[in-house]
Length: 110
Length: 115
Image (cartoon, rainbow over all chains, first blue to last red; front, top):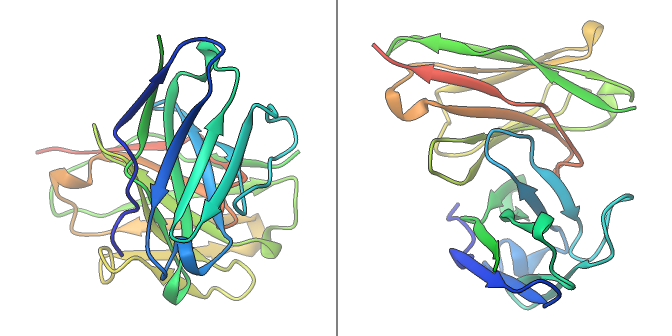
């Protein structure tokens, strides 16, 4: 049950687009269409941004989108805004009915 | 509206156990799995396990197997996570979340382990 691999940090200027990658294996990301992304401010409850690879919950801005290719999932934030600054975590359903998180990516708006 | 409300801050000594509760409302409690996730200081989110409130079935992360117990009381729509043999490494925020992708989360419970 190794953690999924995310870049430690990603930054961009307001209005730009950024993409966060999340790399796993065929036992998790590559094997199931069950990748989710959460926005997290420490000490607060994480907020679901994307589920089942591409689905956006009601109320989440359409500036957030998800995709997957092979063992790597991605979260793209378009039209970057100051309010998007946070930690982002990917998560995937995995073999043996378990769940695994990525290490987290700090998004900074320059 | 769906809500998960967790119990309050805990301070424990090394070697002790802690039991955190997660009370669900706004949906049929037995219809959705509850997952437990923690975040230690300066660390990322870590999945601990899940419980199926319908039948009490559980699945734990290998890391916590033998030390964690997840239970539920359907009469009060509440899930519990008990962690035993605490060490300072268990100091963390503990969260409950609904469904494997966590569409709703509890507010978090800070557990501090200190002598």
